[in-house]
Image (tube, rainbow, N blue to C red; front, side, top):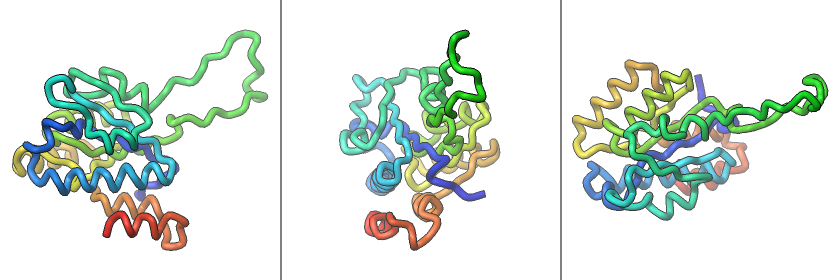
Length: 198
């Protein structure tokens, strides 16, 4: 199964100013998150961010926040109970008795038509893990971008990946996402994407 940009949404978990310096290989993790967000924006893939108690851990890093359609504040480790699931799968308008019959209504195109959730963030073993497990529990397709995720230690990060894979998440890298979204060297964004990852 390959990713398709038209059925994807990108979720970036807790890339925050006071947290990133404690993350193993933080520079590379952040760089890959920027690649994903920049290409997603170029290809019109919706991007959402989360920030965990920013008054204590600092704000979501501004240049990454600028790529997001929305950034939600949270206090729980998983972003799902605080509204992420609603952002990713908005409920359609119910209509009323005077609305058009169903066969005359135009089909709505919302982000709910994008079931592939591409997710990356920190800490891999805490907020990213719990959010991804909740998304899996909600029967969404979850694609974890391993080289854009980090924890304070490699051991914690790798344990999170093992657990996520065991629960049905697809583990991918930034380049896998980029080239699957592009599909072909003929894609109009190919050169732009190549410059991003070089």
